[in-house]
Image 1 (spheres, one colour):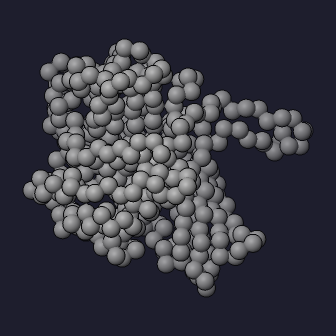
Image 2: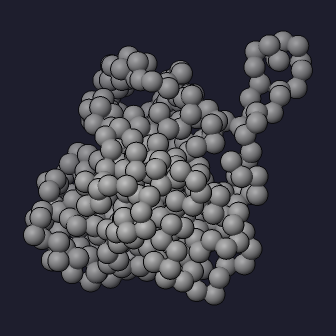
Image 3: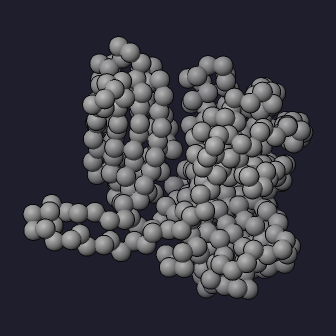
Length: 373
């Protein structure tokens, strides 16, 4: 990882991960919850990368519970939490829980039992703290029925932006919406509490009207008036940001936002996302790179890279795709599902690089920024 302090977010720093889940139970649901937890605990114990977990109950309010788990690193946890297995594993808990809040933290420093016994100071782990700007990023992705793309794009482009200010500390900063064929990707930037902002947006009448309008066109049925249906839909639609980097120096006077879609070969999504993340870190150290900032989103074999660039996208196709450096095109070729993106054959040719850029570039639908408070 770069030591420049520019990285605001990364799942690829190699540190262990601490996951914290806060839960508020319905009255009388504790035994049902404990039974559901035991089932979940036994299943999670066999997930690769899982190290341990703890179940805790508040000493002040018995309806408040805490589940913590430790993982070898973020990638195995993200692979599990975004899987269908996870959706089914946590389903029994839904009827017990009034509210939940999930938080994920890299473990940068820790004290071992041996160090506690000898009173020696803990050795710092070789993981650097990242410098952020108080902005969280998240995306949702879903597919619509083939043939409905233009109608869905029209509906999504016409919605009224919700109020940007959520509360005293949380504000919607930017919403960028793109389509690639029948796939929709909606990326949001939030200053403050991401969960509070997402809940705020979901309650706004103008947003609910748009969501209801596109319901008939979705490939996966949903009923937003049914909490269980809505929960499952948004769980499956989550497209987490796994890496974000911004170049040093002053922001260019003009940058253009693009979203690039990289469908991965089966089981290669995380590796492809890692490749693009490392490439964007290298670009951040290159003053000649047109890529000013990049966010990589990944879920299963869906990888989306949101970039802000100077100049035209096709002015430097290799840089725009994140392929600078020897053998990088070959690495991407190994991980990319070329048939799904419509580009088969070697990425070592200029023609196929240009075709890939053209085919990966997603159609912009809306890009709305609220600016600073």
